[in-house]
Length: 152
Image (cartoon, rainbow, N blue to C red; front, side, top):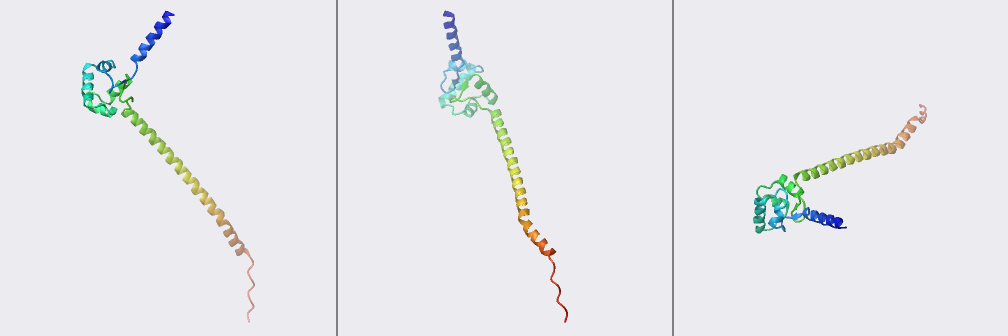
């Protein structure tokens, strides 16, 4: 029983250690605990935070010297958040744009296919509509001609 209790306590401690740390609410010690943030970076973060909370990851990257997109991605993976959100870097944005472009291309292809099918249907309908007129003209052409009147 004691072993189970000890294991439970250790798991709770580990889960607390892995919990996300919000840059706007964290103490300097909590920031130091994030892998990739040392004392110098945590002091810079605290100094910038005194000027005002970080509104987004872009604001964080812009205001904290030495933090770019790649480092922000690493810090986010280590558990740092800005206003409770993880970093969605340039790679994720490009991936979203690529997926949207692919979807747009697929939609355009489907629309072109549909337009082609509609044009084919309209052509078929035009043939069907023209068929009775052509048939009537054929019948009229093949009908016997009236005899010519006799000369006087």
